[in-house]
Amino acid sequence: MQDSSLQDAVVAVTGAGQGIGRAIATAFARQGARLVVSDINGEAAQATADALRELGVQAEALRVDVRSPDDNAAQVARAAAKFGRLDVMVCNAGIVQVKHFMDLVPADWDTMMGVNVTGVFLSMQAAARQMLGQAPRVAGAPQGKIINLASIAGRMGAGPIAALMAPYRASKAAVISLTQSAAITFAPKVTVNAICPGIVDTAMWAKIDRDMAEQTGAALGQSWQQRIAAIPMGRPQEAQDVAGVAVFLGSSAADYMTGQSINVEGGLVMS
Image (cartoon, rainbow, N blue to C red; front, side):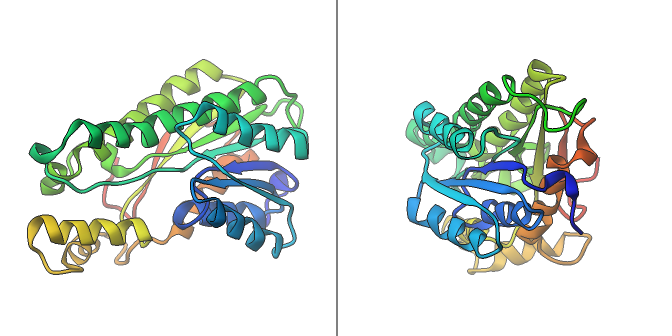
């Protein structure tokens, strides 16, 4: 269903070269938004932009390493230069690692926090600088919206998998906390919310399954099957399940929501 509040809105998405990021960019494009998509793989970002243009919308692509303040500023500057503003920033870029707690080295921790936490922080900061200085598209509405991708891994629990994904889980808990801090900082001009996906059928989870097999000796695919067997909705999550919630948060329907981290995981975590 088309949401008129997103027609011609300007949306930037990091990590848009594949998976959830590409699905989110596509979902916004189908609402008539104009996109600036980025990825550390510049060719993948360009492929996403090309696909978006085939949907009949304007789309720009660039290579962005979210750990770089200059790269984050460049994405926002591209949106402002091309379209005059930035309405929605989706901080999606992220990485994952499966490695036992006691085998981790400082470089593992630094890399994970650099992309998943510092990257989100810098993307939010760059977007807020633009949004706080622009007028709202509609009188009385927020001047901009920021949507962060966290994870149910940042919540309590996780069972045995926690021993193998400590830095990742810590990074996503930090994203939830950053979301709350930014929501308070930027209210009422800019809303800031997060999405916490679960077991999503993407290349990232395929990597997790391979790494889990190497770490535990389980058969390839066993970890994936065990995780999806516990999902009350009875199927693995698709990237489109996440994208739909992102579109909602970017629309006028969510104008009064800020500081929330929404679980979208088929019932694995109920709160």
